[in-house]
Structure formats: structure tokens, C-alpha cells
Image (cartoon, rainbow, N blue to C red; front, side, top):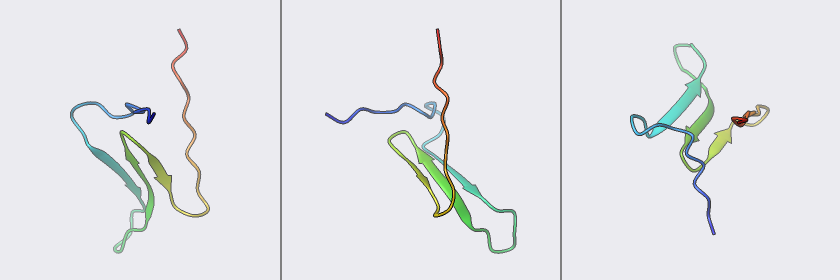
Length: 50
């Protein structure tokens, strides 16, 4: 069974993190189902603790 991560709100479908250059390089792509960092990068998530 695939579990949906629910990272994003209903307002957005994708977050793309990239460098601030004339020809930007994508560092990571985040969707509700996955997080895909570029080679050499990592993404850390902190869960909400109740």
C-alpha cells in the first residue's frame, strides 16, 4: 500500500528548489508523494510531535 505523505497544502502541487542564477540548477523537487533531491543533496523532514 502506498502512503501519501501530504507534505503540501491544497494550494500547491509542487515545490522546486533551485539556485539563484541565470541558468538555475534544480536542487530538489517536492510533491505530495515524493521528495527528489539532486545528487549530492539531501532533504531532512521533521515530523510534528503531539
